[in-house]
Image (cartoon, rainbow, N blue to C red; front, side, top):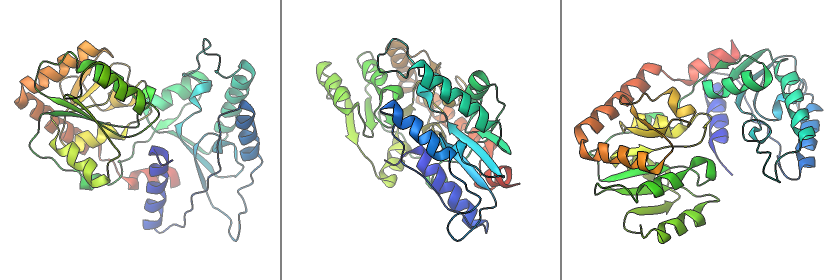
Length: 329
């Protein structure tokens, strides 16, 4: 499985190499079921001594994901992409498959212990930093980075569709867009790209609502196809639940497209202001439909919002050089 964390790790490694450093990515398998596998992974990483690896001695180690934070090295920097959220904000005591209290306690205590020992503590975003403060009492510095191939995004005159690229999972909430299309009055489509565990469910929703002529599930796209769909969209819908960061927001801004997001979407709200770089609405199908109709009915406004988004992105001056400066200096 190749997702945002893997893309970030590869981007960090490539930037390190270009800056003249030696860099490797080291990962271990992680399974979240059964719970004993979580504890085993924690113990395994905790037993790892990174002061000496095969044929070399690392000067610095940068840990990105749980439970790699637990490894041992005197110069350990932690850039927390996200914690094991099922032990924190995604814990649902009503779900019989939720983690038991003892496992959650162990994760929280050991996260706090090991992250507090880092020489530097950074977070992927303000959203992630907020969770570290809330659940672990730790202060982390948000450290933004550019999405992959940021210099290859472009804009083109819009076609009548809303684009929504992401993994098809419950937390990404593409179902809100499908529901919204039942209420949209403007003659626009919704194009949903990506694959994931909810593909069958979303396809069945489209069938049940007789939306085959308004909603398309187009599956995986190549990077070139993805950029083309961004470039020609009227707007982009990205309304996840408490997203850690969200490349999709930044990619939309690079393509000069307004972002429709939700009041509880987390990461996107760090870049989008209502009416400026996009529209922020309640996570409600009718509210999303109204936002789509607003942009479809006012294409000049949609274009201006998209241009604002690109200007906002440029003002952030996101670069791997800045990331390396924070993590290495």
